[in-house]
Every structure is written in structure tokens, then in C-alpha cells.
Image 1 (tube, rainbow, N blue to C red):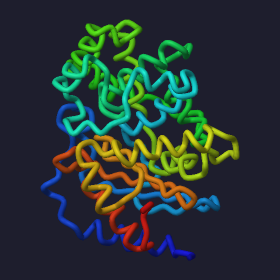
Image 2: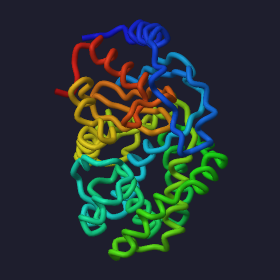
Image 3: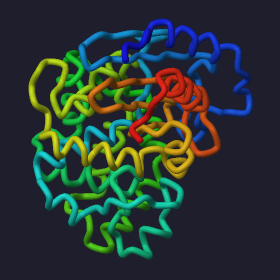
Image 4: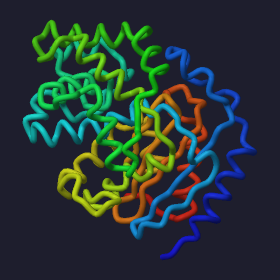
Length: 306
């Protein structure tokens, strides 16, 4: 069935701008993100046929934050293969994304690669195999979206670094269990750098396209094998939306990954990749307007992955 995505996105944008999201709040523990205007909204959809549709501030960079964890995972998978899964598990956490308690109970092995502990361990694995781990994720994202100028926002990085004691605590706890291979400060720096990458919604939809296209990126090159693409999509579906993943699967029903910068990427394999961005977050740390926009999109096209 052919959908008029341009009309759908316009309807979504109109509805979002008429909805009251005043109960949602921007992240407060990364001060550099607090200055982003509340009412920004962007949505970009890239179809399997290569068509691209956009609404709102689609070309305004934002801090991708935890969305970066998907792409770091791909780099680690490329370097380590299935040995990756000896270092990090594949289960939903059911706890806060920066929990120390669960990590200690499970002897320093993170529950999945999308909570902070798991992403720090993935950054550690990247540091063991890549020559410039501080830049690896940004450079990879630049390749995927076709913009070699993708960069780390230094103001956000410095803010992350200055207010990152909990993430350092997570890393040191893993180190105490001998579950971190490289020096803590090196690993945490690389992790902060990847989270501080700035991209537009258009660039993010392009970067995520391979997840909707059997592992093939916008340039026609294979990023990862189709089977690995399916596995990453499965992890996004079960672990990608912090501890709101169950509600998101119920109401939206697509693989997705959010970040506290207000971005969400999502895919329906074989159909499209999408990025939505709005900075105000719900109580679980996901973009309130972003989730609403994706709900409306799925309702308009009449299907999810289920």
C-alpha cells in the first residue's frame, strides 16, 4: 500500500504543535542541553525506495546522546563478532539506565548494550580495537549519513565530562570486577565523546537507514549482514527506550532507540527509517513529542512490526 507520507508528516507536525507538553522537561543533569528551545520539533522519514520526507527543524543539529549506542554496538560487533556477547548481555534491564545496583548484583556484566553500563563496556571494546576510539563513532556516523563533517559538540562533551561522576562510578565498578580492559578515564572519555556527537534529524534518518534495508546503507554498501541487522533491531525493540520499552512496544511497536537530547530513531524493516526530535522528555527520559509523533505515524499507516 502506498502512503502519502508528506501529508502524514504535516498532520503530525500540526498536531504536535497543538499539544500541551508542559509536563515534559529537558534533561537537567547535562547543563549544556538545558539551553535548547522547548518547542523545537523535527521529523524525517526515509523510505526503502530512497525518498526522503521532512518536517520542522530537520536540518538543525542536536545532541544524539544514547542514540549513539546503536552505532557503537555495530562497530563493536564488527571488531569482536559474537565474542561481544560474552562482555554484555541482551536482556531488558527493568531498572534505571544508569543503575549501579543491578550491575553489582550481576558481577559487573551489563544487562544490555543500551543502558549506560553496557554502552561503557562497548566503548571499552571499541577502544581495544580501533586506533582512535574518541572519534570512531562520529566518523562511522559520518560515513553512514554521507557527511564526513559530523563532529563532537565540545560544549556538550565538557558538560558531560564535568557532570559524569555516576558514569565514572559505573566504569570503576566494572573495573573492580575485571570487566573493563582499558583505563577507566580513557573509556569514559570515549563514551562521553560518542554521546556528544551533534547531528540533524535528516542525518540521523539516513544513518539509521541500513537497519531498515537489510544492512545496506544509503550509499548501497553493506554496513552489516542482514542477520546482524535483525539482531540489532531486536535489541532496539526490547531495550531501546529505557524503562519505557514495554509501553513503547505496546503503543508504537517498532524497533527504536532514544536519547536524552530528545531524539528517537526507529525503523520498520523493508519500509523506512525515521528520526524524530523534540527536546522535552517524559518521566522515563524519552522525547514526549517524539513518542506521540511516532504513535501517530504508526496509526496513520496502519501497521507496526507486529
